Image (cartoon, rainbow, N blue to C red):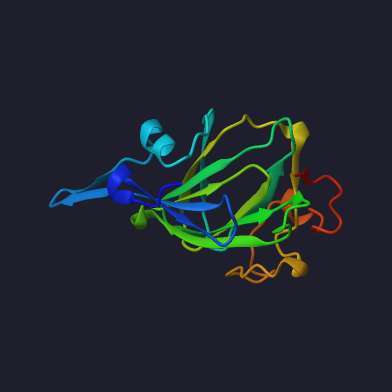
Length: 194
């Protein structure tokens, strides 16, 4: 992957886990505001990112402290995600759930803000979750496979074994009933295989 933003118009920043990358598109600003190209197939491919995006979701969370996740889909419907915030801010988390991976159970946590233009690319084989840092936070995320509820699984967001630095306490987090009842990583039998 290229990390040369000048050559591709897209800076690719490696994280602590191979495959999870932070993308920083080039931004053009003047007295009117700014413009950035958030997706360009040619620029992505030049950077070694060859996903075929087939679905885009728009999520809005009314309150700060809303936690969604940690979700993933099993093959044959495993999904990569490209996440960006268009209003507000989140702590975005990618958790390696690939049994046999040298980073199995490890995570990357990145703050994304509407004003920074950064995007997090989360490959298939990772559970994804986030916590909103501001009210009325909205994000868009692209997926390279369709939502398939029969293949959807999850890991409990506050599993103490994961040591994720969530910015909200268990008592203060706003969760769906479904996310509140997810198993810990150790209790989840249905994980990805390398």
